[in-house]
Length: 177
Image (cartoon, rainbow, N blue to C red; front, side, top):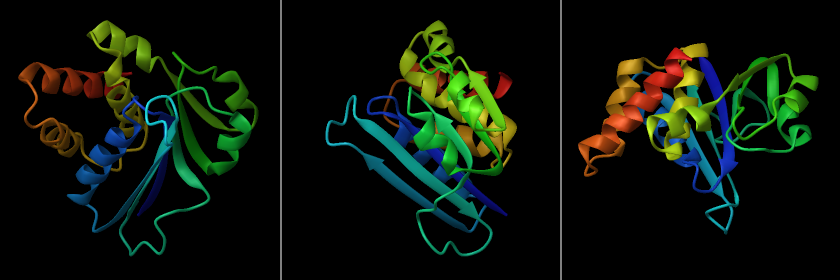
């Protein structure tokens, strides 16, 4: 088993948080994993991305050129993103902040999710990252839902029960989309 995931957006969207939750949950089931975060000096508003590689065999490098799934949280240059998708891969776009049409031109499988809009309906657009994570796991079942929910709870340890519930609800909303 090998799953290579690239999550990209801007600082403040929880791109790295979504990657950390995915990586921590995957670690419970898969013996080999890398999590490689990257963010601009601006932190909020600058480009932020992370790579998660989940494998049943040793991972030779924490970075790769092609990914099985790309999650795009905010408008990015399709010419820079689409070539990174492996043949047969899945590209999931936050339609609330991105126009999916340019991505479709060079990519076979594009899924558009109104993540920010759904998050706003839940009460906080900051949980769009958990909606995107749910949408990803609905389409690429590499980690069990219960493991992700456990890691969401662990990630928000020390926060209010309402914050934990909101993030769980967002994740479940993405699973249902």
